[in-house]
Length: 50
Image 1 (tube, rainbow, N blue to C red):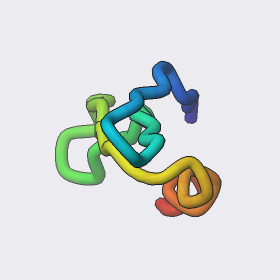
Image 2: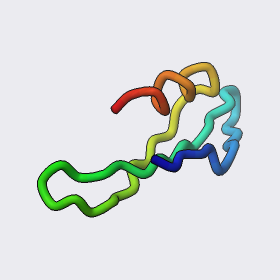
Image 3: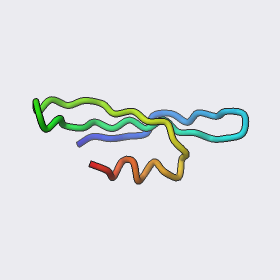
Image 4: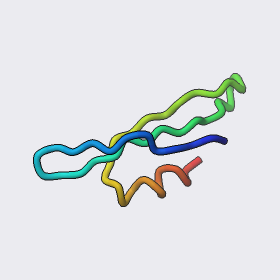
């Protein structure tokens, strides 16, 4: 499973990170991308989820 963080976004007062991970669909077996924008501290937890 490939995964990586691709961008750091900065708004007026908060730093945000956009994380993208590739997940294999249990139904079809195809890979799809899941994107989320979150605080940088939460990225590792997001990437560890299955």
